[in-house]
Image 1 (cartoon, one colour):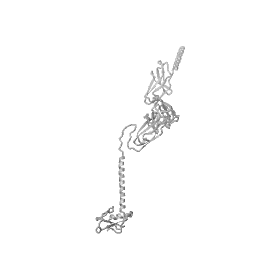
Image 2: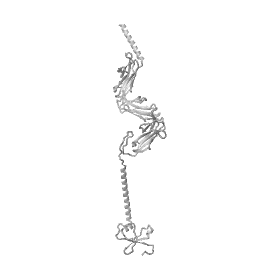
Image 3: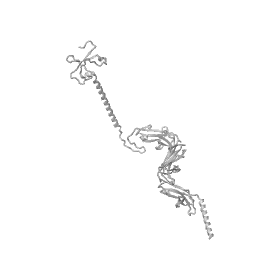
Length: 443
């Protein structure tokens, strides 16, 4: 019995040595995720175990604490997970085996599968701003209103996938500040961040909004102007023109840091410089502000020129009609202008004032004329003996008017002064002219 036992022990020892030699002879497989190891909640992900012959059987494991739990075993090297839930989040590995299972590979390196969307998205912002000159620094701040104590920063690669650029542990509601700099072209790009809890490292929040970090300064600045001038009346169409002597094929217009779009160059100016027009539509007070423009190339979208000189646009006047948005064409029926009614009232009011002023002046003149003694005498029909005309004119001093009786004198009718009496007498009045410089009167 002893020889039999010794033979079995020897056989087992030899088999174990052969298996260990086979395991060490082949490279361990690798595990990858498509389209990404970061999977939104409810979507699917495909895991692929990469290994060569003689492995034709593949096993997928998920680490559960200190041990590996086998999930699937099949003759294909792809495993589909989904729609994913929070239970799918974790660390995965795979291994291969021969058809007889006598040869097995070692397990692959762990691949973390992260499930996102388990909480609301955080916010991300750039300080002092997303436009950074070469060599300067920028800080990306990630913050959430929820009680998250870990933040992860990702940057979009040239292939379109996001890669982890850093993570930071915080406490309570404190934000995470990711320092980037000195700024180079490699640092520019599109960033986003996630939030999570340190005891659940494979469960992340929804992704934040994207923020573009732009490097400025490699090229000469363009010029910015307003068609028709920087002062525009409300309701008039506003068009800003960005032009440059450099061969930019893309232009960007910003108003106080707000990106208003980046159309391609629209043509050449008279000086053969590329330019782009930015129609803003009918001017409103909201269009007033400081504008700048930049130029860039399509093959380097995160590298912009220097900023143009600032252009201050002022929209004056007020409007009562609603103007359509320049981005969404539609027609609106304008309300009739109220200026016509206002002009009519101004004309009527002005004529009333003029009529009243004229009436007052005429009344004052009439009162002044009536208060003069000579005029009063003539109007009342009194005799003008021994009355002389106002001594201002020397010729008038030599003429005396007398009221004579019609029945006793020969009649020489003369026209009285132009001032007609207020109450004319029924009997005709005869005036006789005497020259006091002659020695005797006319018979």
